[in-house]
Image (cartoon, rainbow, N blue to C red):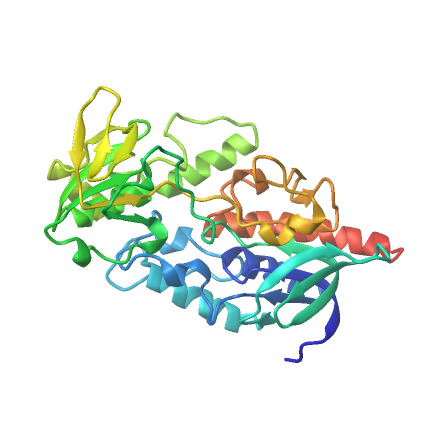
Length: 356
């Protein structure tokens, strides 16, 4: 690949699940497009998850458009390694034009006002439309609590965690009330003295309900149909490791502490706890720094959209960042559903621009 400037109908920024789903529909629509991915290999953020991660739904409910994910032998809930394999094969199966590694540095308006310029470390693409699908894995969130700079132990985020071996015999505080925290503390607690802390009491799904029911419920709510009070997509799914941890009495979360101390954490009531490490399972923010030149990101770190298109810059669409870009759009199956609508709007806009 040369490092000059190229013209393209649509430039997709990001080659993970949302980028591939977008590419699938762009290819079906016959649009000239490219997918720019900053990673060395296929799989998106799935290549960087912790070793034991499991999806919250079986393979048959965790697919991208066009090809159902095959089951992983011996497991009802697929591993991150299986999802990486699936995305790799998906990209090959549909011959998607992914360029990697290409780091997108900024998206800006061309001076003539007709295109968006996608500047990268490998040259630039001049695109009639841009779809941002960078997700949030590259933008981990840490709460702004007093004392974070004075704590002398280790502080890690979910993005830094791989397996429990390094915590053997340690005292570990796991912070966060979602699925990541539950799955991680389930295995760290087998080798370490753990304390779970969350800003609100974690909500657990019934043992016989997984994310299939949650996604169906979210879909019905999005259509205004309502539905039974099962919960939402942030509730903890009782995959086997989490059920086992519950049965051991591990999944009991304390209220959030007020501050960090040099050797641990302290609560507002004066109580404290010494620990060797704090693992922050405290979520992510949308990774949107590349859109700064367009001036479309608001004070909440999001892009105001109508459907999936930026209100301030209609040549920009966003897929896969969460419910503000489509119900469950950060999930595998949700990315496909929202990408379909985004591409339909783009093809309509291209046809209008061409006078068709």
